[in-house]
Amino acid sequence: MGTVSVAQIKVTPLKRISLAGGDVLHGMKRDEPGFVDFGEAYFSMIEVDAIKAWKRHLRMTLNFVVPIGMVRFVFMDDQGGLREEVTGMDRYVRLTVPPGIWFGFKGLTAPYSMLMNIADIPHDPVEIERKSLDEIHFNWEHMK
Amino acid sequence: MGTVSVAQIKVTPLKRISLAGGDVLHGMKRDEPGFVDFGEAYFSMIEVDAIKAWKRHLRMTLNFVVPIGMVRFVFMDDQGGLREEVTGMDRYVRLTVPPGIWFGFKGLTAPYSMLMNIADIPHDPVEIERKSLDEIHFNWEHMK
Image: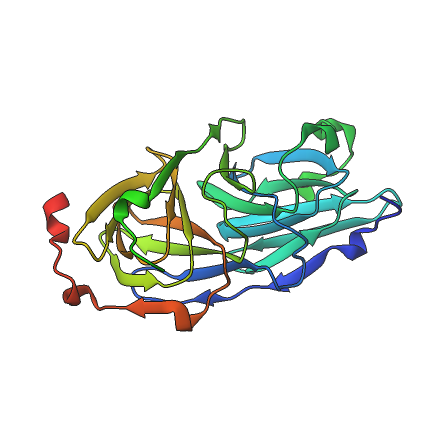
């Protein structure tokens, strides 16, 4: 997978279309930046103040979209690079994360936020590395 | 597009995985029933008691998943066939709708429900037909 840097994470603004009865929110089109292939789409709920961390994919390119609530993502690479992105209803963007980057995220909105990941490959436990929350030192409280 | 019937709508149960901090909900994998191709993924919010109707796609196969709230879908074909499906958190399934079927939906949960559509082609206004709510007679109140 070569050397990968948090600078390679792409941020793509997404449209939210106001409609009577409920808005329509874009997610991803196949001809848009960040689209590699379609492997799987799944949702992850994140309760307010809950943290899900840490995980790294060796092959999967992630495309995170947060249509409900707000989520703080923290990304780390092997060169010591650190990057934070806050996204959701108030900053509606898609985050494209190449393989090889450690990430975690925290829910900022009560009762919960929800992210969608459009991944280029289906879930495969063999390509996932995990560390417990304590194994990577990061002060999640600095952001309060 | 030939003759299409509401009987061709597929219902596929989806997994919801309980996790500390927030559940993970499956959406679609490329090797699963109903997957044709990836064109676009988008979200539609639907406020409680709001109705979005009617629409028909001439080319798009729809894959509806409702991870938030509950939604009542009504489908109609050209042979007079009528079908209703209620889906969402309490009955977590994917609805695969072939092209050629009129559909509308109503939000059943306060403050809103949310559906995702994974479509096999990107949005294209040329392949969409619309009718106003009043143009197709359906008693949306029968379901209360």
